[in-house]
Image 1 (tube, rainbow, N blue to C red):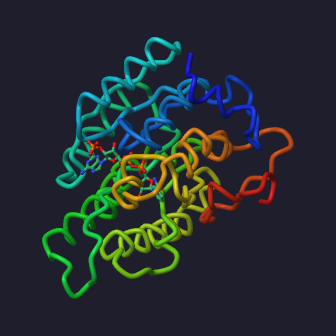
Image 2: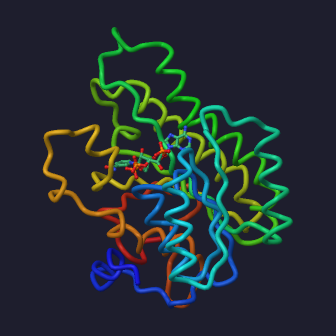
Length: 266
Ligand SMILES: NC(=O)c1ccc[n+]([C@@H]2O[C@H](COP(=O)([O-])OP(=O)(O)OC[C@H]3O[C@@H](n4cnc5c(N)ncnc54)[C@H](OP(=O)(O)O)[C@@H]3O)[C@@H](O)[C@H]2O)c1
């Protein structure tokens, strides 16, 4: 069974029912590593079929194998370099999700490119464009294609933000700008879909979390000084599950912080 998850589950602020995501289908980008892999495994443990989207094939296969071995759900791998995602590829993905699962109930924009940690004066233009393409344009293209499925029934979109997406900080360049943009995207999408009463859109800042990206950004930091991705999965489950007894959900468009959110704050 999933030991990393079992290690932290007792400390979660929210304790969902074991089958709270049964029958749902959830697409996750960057599902092969870090927070994306933890979300994929967690959502599968709680009953969801996962569309594992990512760039490197082997990590996706490892997550697929783990889900197949430990849950009765039916994941699928979608290899995609988001830096080069086209409208046609996103439309094909929408059609195959519809054919395979009959719908889509969740989308987690999680994949991200860190880019250069350098002053704007020296920031390489090509790298700037690659970061914005991966972190902002790809989520837009993917959401645009998948929106008909997401607004056909109750669903949830989680946009993965960052502390530097809410307050600019020197040397974070395109990554910081891309997260500000994703925050704006999140609010616009929430405002445009609120009338449906079906789609909830959130931006979640995981805060410092023990992953490869964190180690790249803070090479001198002791990884054990920051929480594991699994620690945050109570919030991810809380949002993805949607309405259930005794819960107050944050309003669509809300900005949340995984490390400090409080249960039932609305
Ligand atoms: N860890 C933190 O402290 C922290 C703090 C704030 C926000 N976040 C955010 O949390 C999210 C997850 O990051 P993480 O820390 O879990 O990082 P991670 O372990 O490095 O995972 C990042 C994932 O994104 C994928 N990815 C990168 N570029 C891609 C592309 N062009 N196409 C498809 N997939 C791509 C990677 O796949 P490959 O391995 O194939 O490249 C990897 O699976 C990111 O949005 C990040 O900005 C993290």
